[in-house]
Length: 405
Ligand code: ADP
Image 1: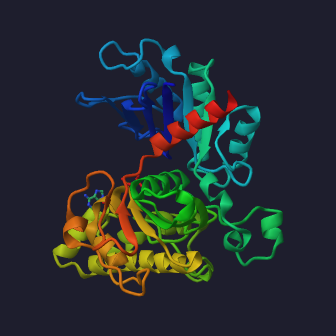
Image 2: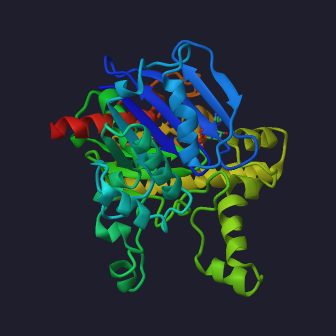
Image 3: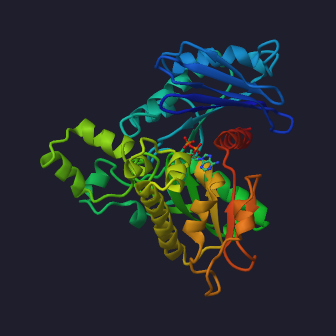
């Protein structure tokens, strides 16, 4: 089945065409800076150089209109006609408690996505807009919505509740939901495949470290806890987000420092994390690492705080799982930053009472597919697994449609 996947972010729409024959990615691309001056479309067909061109894209719906003609372009297309696309998969960030797995889109599903726009105001609205625009173009094909929160639907109540009066959960659905579920689900299954063990027999801690960062405790393939919460702000220190803080700090900033709601929002989401701690004006790990190497003390402290928080969560999830057979690193930082992996793992308690150590050569070798980087193979396995959210969406789309036949 040829599957077209859309993955819309707050200001971008990514897409990938997966071929029916062997599930390979045939073409992929992105429209970036949607709704801003200087929007660009990048498009690449397997084995050919990428193309980039300026485009007009006022919103995610228009971005779909920019993308679809390129799928059948005489030189840069991969399909003879748009009817060659047999199914369309969509990443939707928030499905709340109602969406615990992928679903075929109907009016009810769209109503749920709309309902959760309040909880994911930057992501669900463009996701819905992409979905509606794609339904207009691919009106005869099934559309499948795949949710980032769904993988975490198995987290037990004692782990997802906040210590608030119960009606805030019962009435307002205020609880921890977790995010990055497509990535945590994908890399945990890939890790089990690499280890040659049934996923049901494995306890894993998966670390998705990109611009946004989260850690998940995965027990037998099911998420049992994760570091992000009601929103993606909770948990780890991230590129520009603060992660866990004392909630009373928000009151203090507003009451004593006179910050408005939008100023606090901007501070915690956009000015904090590696960017705020380092003070170098960038939350990109590469920039912070190079400032640290050049002797910038605050950049070094930012890196230490970033790694310490991850290590603390990994330790907590070892306690949650009662031990772990594998720790998995993924996303831009997890796949490419050996210093972070070392700072998180070296010296953690290993399975047989020893201490975990990474093999410096393996850990520092350039990224190349799935690999293991710990010294020895008798204790906890430390894996680097490239994530692929688009492939996960295509896989869930195919599986769901096959079940319904
Ligand atoms: P997003 O969450 O936007 O998908 P990515 O998964 O692409 O983000 O991760 C972005 C982060 O990965 C940035 O902090 C970037 O510095 C880091 N990163 C990417 N490549 C490298 C590298 N070679 N070495 C260290 N960090 C890297």
